Image (tube, rainbow, N blue to C red):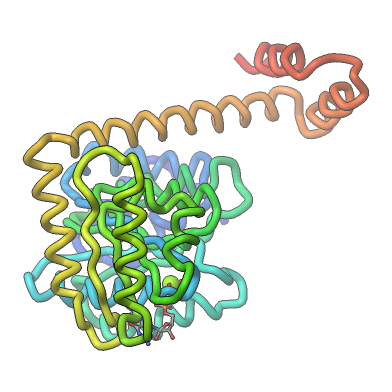
Length: 318
Ligand SMILES: Nc1nc2c(ncn2[C@@H]2O[C@H](COP(=O)(O)OP(=O)(O)OP(=O)(O)O)[C@@H](O)[C@H]2O)c(=O)[nH]1
Ligand SMILES: [Mg+2]
């Protein structure tokens, strides 16, 4: 893979803005690779963004997130708006199963220029998902998608954080004893702006709604209560209501101004993470791989402490 320079990134972005999908796909691959490539893509995109509205969609594996997202795409297309979907780190990124599954499920939109769907897997490099996602959104924003859905599995701290860093956060649960409790444990209660009880064609949906209401009334989360919507994603039931709930939330945070605060906090988190990743990278470069390993060995052997070592690593990196 060859590095892409700033002129090339700008040319790719221009082409993507003119509707050329291969150019957009290449930009997102740059973001996935991280490092300098991600920086080039993000740098050209950043000044052109700011108009996209982001929806985070998270929940247990198999709860119907992708099916719901497909239904939401259809809903958005009825209004004539364009929509992009980032399916982050699908459960089995390398088997091809999840990605292929997403394609098949989202197949009804495959020929629609107004819908762009992309799976992203960024495990293993510095900053990973937490850094790649905001920059991928930046690119889609700059390309002119007014709606961007970020789908993550609601398991694992980073996945929950990534979906939680959206303008409206939708948490998907299913009927069944304990699903709401699991969502609570995974930290999804705190981030939800809208709850969806999907697979409402199965027994127990009303009980799950009650569980959620009960938990919400016991919680000490500030601000208005999240809406709870029941859906059957496979036949589209409840999807209009879900879209209404998202639109209501958007109206509310726009009117009371909290959207500005949300977006600022997001940038704050991103900057902290970027500083940490940049410093970690510099420290490693300053001492080369063997030097870093040697530093690890010295701390492990208690020849020195971690703080002194960090000072030394960063001193050499200025
Ligand atoms: N009965 C029923 N099945 C559903 C419903 N929504 C989705 N499914 C099915 O549930 C399965 C999982 O759906 P997905 O949309 O792939 O779920 P997901 O949450 O995106 O899954 P991961 O991305 O793998 O975590 C599929 O077989 C869907 O057809 C629903 O409302 N009712
Ligand atoms: Mg999915």
